[in-house]
Length: 125
Image (cartoon, rainbow, N blue to C red):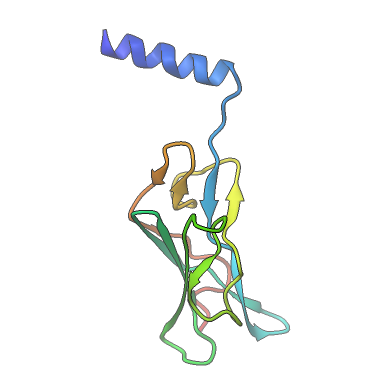
C-alpha cells in the first residue's frame, strides 16, 4: 500500500507541474586566474543545517581553497568568506539536480552533506 501511495503522490506532483527549487553555489568566484582561464570555478560544496559552503581553488595561495558560505537569512546572502572574491548571494536553480545543488527549498533541507562539482578550471591550480 505504501508503494501505491508513493506512486500516486509522484504522479500528482508531476502532473500538476510542481518543480523543486534549490539554492546553488555560484559557478565561479571573482578571483581571476588569467584572461584565458577566467575566474576560479567551483570544485565542491558542503551543506550543514541551513548553511551551504562553496569551495573554489585559491589563485593567490595554490593548494588552498576560498570558502564562501551562504545561509537563508537575508535571502541567501554571504555569511562568511572574502567579500572581494565571493559572490554576495547564492543562486537559485529551478531544476534542483542531485549532486549540483546543496539546498532544496521545497523540503527545506540539504540535498546531501557534500557534493563534488569539479567545474571547468577548478583543478588547474
